[in-house]
Each structure stands twice: as structure tokens, then as C-alpha cells.
Image (cartoon, rainbow, N blue to C red; front, top):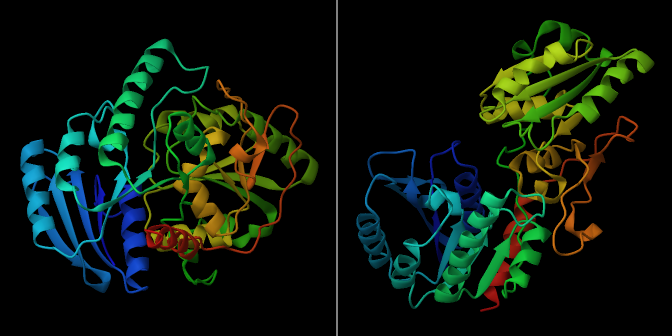
Length: 378
């Protein structure tokens, strides 16, 4: 089997979906499946890039600054040079293809290029504003996005449709399309490390008095408009008084969205300590999650947290995950199966209790098995 993977960007470490797709292709190669990786709208390069990675997998990155017609021609040439392609797997991120998330011009392009191939679509995101609480302007945008996503599916007629969370399966089914779950996995490979390996990168007072601390971690952006973490941080302040332990909240990775909010937290919670690592290589991130983090924090709404790469990094390292209890409502009933059961949901009535870490669990082999099995059915 030979698969053409199409995503937006393949800039290593700069695009979560690109990193997921690359790891999936490498895992497929271990099963004797050939792959080609194409970043069709790569905003992280101004020149075309052609490289070869692990297992001899070719990688092509087409600049987003190129006109769509030029990118179409280049992808056509890549396909023509590989006449034994069996599947085209489109890793769909609407905002990666269009600044407003309206995928319209690309529909006839993909229809022309992928004609005659078996098509797989993985929806990493869908149309916005399905929830009742959405603003009117966002509702209108969501309606337009949905129109073109439906058109995209009708024109490409994929044999397999996957997405990452049960909510998206529900939304697609209500739009008339059958989809199933392809779980995400961690982009941070769990390293086999010892606590002494990178201890010089950890502040001495934490390293030397690790047993005195409860350590939380926020990985990447902080969506404080979704959850300001007060219901958790206020309980952690009380925990310092009742248990006598110190509480440290760490931020690792590029904060991006929410940086200014993060910088206000030490003033709001003087009884907690805060530590900012910033960008780190994946070995140190894995080391920190493995040896120091007691609880992971995600700020996206509980019902969509399953599409968070932060969640998968915590799970892969056996870290319990805390998030805000779901408050979003939809035109359909929210049932328990729509929310990831691995989450510890926090609200005003929540009583904090330190949850033991669980055995680490790598999800990539499980995901690859589901992916390959779905394709082999056709």
C-alpha cells in the first residue's frame, strides 16, 4: 500500500497536525506501507522544500505564498511521479487552508488531483460555533464553513472519514456523513530518562525538595477566555494550607495565546509558585512530564479537549488531566460518551484531591492499527 498524505504544513515542531501526520507515516512505514508527505499550504516556508526523512519517506513543502494554481501544478507533478499511489489521506484543518476557515477554492483542486484514488479524510477541526453560546457573527461564519465542508465531502466522496472526538462524529452524522474516531497521540515521544539526566535544567529548590511540592503543568497556549483556571487554582491555594505542601504551576512550550494572562497569575495567587520554561526540546518536555508533573491542566472546553495534543502528551506520560467541567450546550443532548472519560472535570463544587499517576500509555500504535484496518477494508 502507498499513501499520499496531504496536510497544511510540515514544519517540524511548528505544526501539530503536520507532526502527527509525520509520525503516523513513519509508523506506517514500520508496517511496510509506503508514504509521501505533502505540506500543501505551508506558512512556515517561502521556498519549496523537498527532503527525505526516516524510512526514506519523501517530504514536499509547498509555500502558502504561492498561488493556488502553482501549488496545484506542483502537487500534480508529485502525484505523476508516484503512479503507484493507492490512497490519498487529506488531513483537514480548515484554518490551515484558509485564513477564515472557508475551504472553497480548494474543492475543485482536490477533486481534479485525487480523481481515481481512494480518499481518506481526517477532520482535525470542523465548522465553528455549533454550540448555543456562540456569538451571532461566529454562527454565521460556522454556517458558511459547514456549507463548504459538506461540498468538500460530496465532491471528494471519501471512502473513509475519521475525526478525533465524539462531538465531531455527532456533527458529521447530523450533516449526513458517517465518520468514526481516529484517536490522536502525543507529538512528544516519551523518552527513557532518569531523574538525574537533566536535573541541571530544573531550579535547584524544586529539584532538591521535590517531595515538598505538588506540581501542575500547562502545555502550550492558555485559552483563558474558555477557562481562567480559577476554580482549580483557588482550590490549590487551599491545598497549600491544608497539606502543608507547596504548589508550583509550570508552563512549558510556546504559550502563544494567553501569554499576558499567564503573567498576571503570580499577582492573583500569591500562595502559589509559577515557573515558565518556554520553548524546550521534546526530550526535556518528556523529562519534566515524567519526573516532576503531578497534574496536567488543559484550558479548552472539556467536550473538545480530545483534539488537544497537550492532553495526549499528558496521557502518554501517565499524568492525570484536569479541565473545566463542560458548560457548552448544543441543539442535541450532551451525553457522557461525548466527553473523554480520562478528564477530571473541575467546577465550583470541586474538592481537590491529588490523583495518582497512571502507567504511561503510548497511543500511536493503537491509532495506526485503527487507521490501517479502516483502509484495508476497501
